[in-house]
Length: 253
Length: 63
Image (cartoon, rainbow over all chains, first blue to last red; front, top):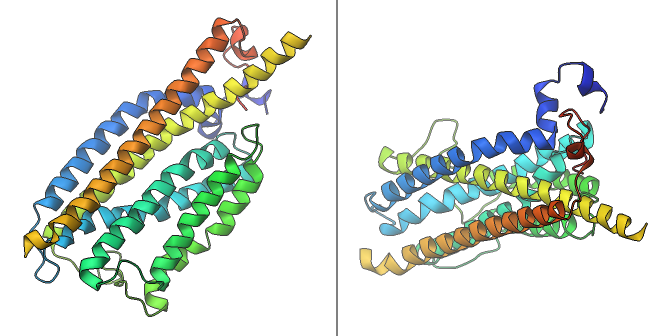
């Protein structure tokens, strides 16, 4: 692997596989990502809070502009981790495990926020904080899987040791993503079926759809910005660990 | 009608803002901790092999 880069011109894939190069590129990209995320989240939340009250749901409809993006993100982050897990198992990409480990806590936060905001929305609209129906239960299982993954990626002293087992857990857990998505169609649930990603187009007026999409784009950018920072930190953490071992060896010899 | 739901909407947005701010703080403090630790090691003269040499194509020792 190492002697290839010296002679042949490296491909784009292997340029990004070099953590030093990744630190350089991501450092330049980072401020733009945070800026764009901030603007989009602010615009989405502003448009959402000023949207007209729903004729049935009243002002609780504004919870949708954060609850739905959090729900999308909880599934998208697991999907991003699944692609990274393939990177670990198939291509042995050195950054793939870093990506999985960095994404897990961010995914867990957005998943628990999806559950909390959903619960707060459910109380006035459904008359209950929680029911053990298919959609809510499958998202709760997703949250538990995030917690399990966090524990697994941080259980071993040496960072990166758990790469393979974490990748397998992520790929096995991916089964849950289509279950969450289609739970509202397959089972009889209290949760409403999809109203944006439908075969016949979104069933929502533009006054709600626009803020929802802007807010979703904003939180997605926010995830990628935070993920990039967390990945950079994880690379540094592994360097610190390697150098500390080196220092310990020197002190002994 | 609107005022009835204010507490629900405000708590949903408030809890979310609080949690995301916490996530931000954790990500940035962790980044700062690792940057400082690396700097301290380098100040003690402990460097990665690839940085000791001048070549930029040196093999990575990041993992």
